[in-house]
Length: 68
Image (cartoon, rainbow, N blue to C red; front, side, top):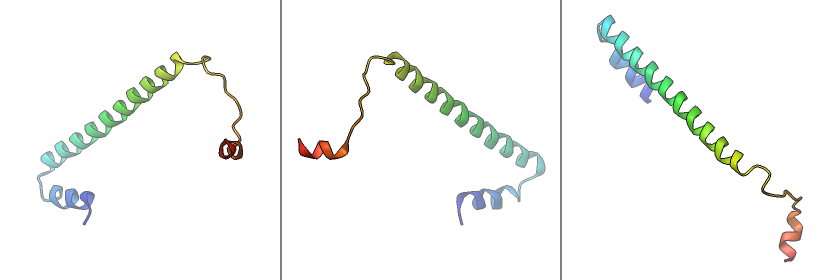
């Protein structure tokens, strides 16, 4: 039995109001996770933006690497 099934089995025996609170709690956790992921992504993009244009990109041939 996975976690979702365990949660379902536990929640289905609760009163409707309490089950609703559990649902709201789970939805809030999911929203928080999405928000944190967005913040992490924006932070990573901001870090990359600081270095934009500072590195000259060159084509890389993998076989040439082995000859060195």
